[in-house]
Image 1 (tube, rainbow, N blue to C red):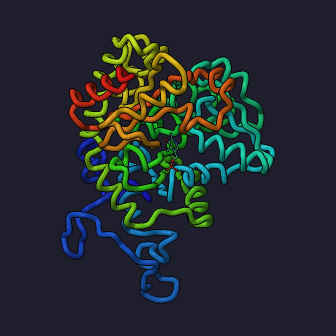
Image 2: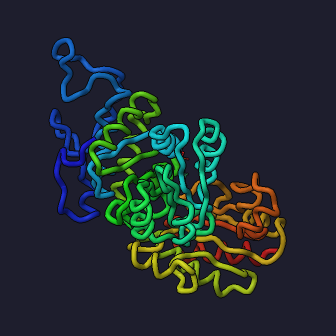
Image 3: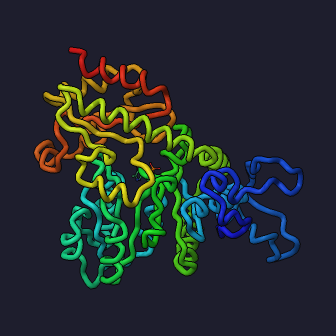
Amino acid sequence: MNANHDSHEGDGFGTRAVHAGQPPDPLTGALMVPIYQNSTYRQRGPADPIDGYEYARTKNPTRSALERNLASLEGGRHGLCFASGLAAINTILNLLKSGDHVVAGDDLYGGTWRLFEKLYVGFGVTFTYVDLADLDALRRALRPNTRFVFAETPTNPLLKICDLAEVAKIAHAGGAKVVCDNTFATPYLQRPLALGCDIVVHSLTKYLGGHSDVIGGALIVSDDELAARLAFFQNAVGGVPGPQECFLVLRGTKTLHLRMDRHCQTAGRIARFLQSHPEVTKVYYPGLKEHPGHAIAAKQMNGFGGMISFVVKGDVERGKRVAARTRLFACAESLGGVESLIEHPPSMTHASIPAELRRARGLDDGLIRISCGVEDADDLERDLQQAIEAR
Ligand SMILES: *Cc1c(COP(=O)(O)O)cnc(C)c1O
């Protein structure tokens, strides 16, 4: 899990995306890391494994390559991979005890909120949700027993931005560690460890895998002791990915920089198109000057990402109709793949929130979320236009 295994430190992002953590197979020179489809390893003698390879829940060479690659991309010392993003987040929560407190953003990924509220509240952990863009609200929420501040930026689906360096300063002054779910930004656009965060979380299912063909998760940290504790839980709980999944994500990360440039370019253009459309009342995209988090995003990110949310005039039915009428944008949950996706949060990902509460949280009835893929921007724009204008 240590990034220094084969050193590409000092190389640029694209070079590390292609090479870090995955030298050619020493046995054959095979360029791609093999899918080590095995559960155990023959040891030189009793309790004398080769390079720590004893049993594949604990360590697998395909997984180790991915863990080193991700650590390098995030600028961390250690990477740990899991069977899903939620399994990765659960492993952070394994560090908590009854009586501990967590401050989290108020626009969290729904599955993260469910894990907090439906499991860990029952174990005696308490959670306070605040808008992390409001630093005074964060200061007020911290308590002597606050162990973590859990941030997402940009958030889902409103693409709110928080200032990670400021959040880290305030959390650390209060004795709490900072976790950043970096799934929406990816390490190409934002590196939370360099901004002072302690743990980076990823759903590998999204941009890092990038091809809508794998479920996976990861944690990246620099602190050796914290890494050792998380590695203990990774092995003790066992929510690890298989080698095939790791191979697919390694294939994905090789083109992360290329894909993200394209996602950002297309999303910037589509956001401006939506802004100019008379049937669209709001556009949420951190790359737009009007976005309240624009200045912070410009400071802490290298691009504004491929996700856009917008509101069409009318009721829930109108929103559903737009999401049903696109031809290229597939109506589906998830995000971050090469193919464009569209969803209507009020009737899909956020349908479990009662309508009044949903509206109070700023999720209008006509809210649509899109994940801009890497198809031609002209075609994507035309597709949205016909879906918005269809009656
Ligand atoms: C999808 C997602 C998760 C959960 O990841 P899974 O791989 O689906 O378990 C967590 N956080 C964010 C921001 C996500 O988009």
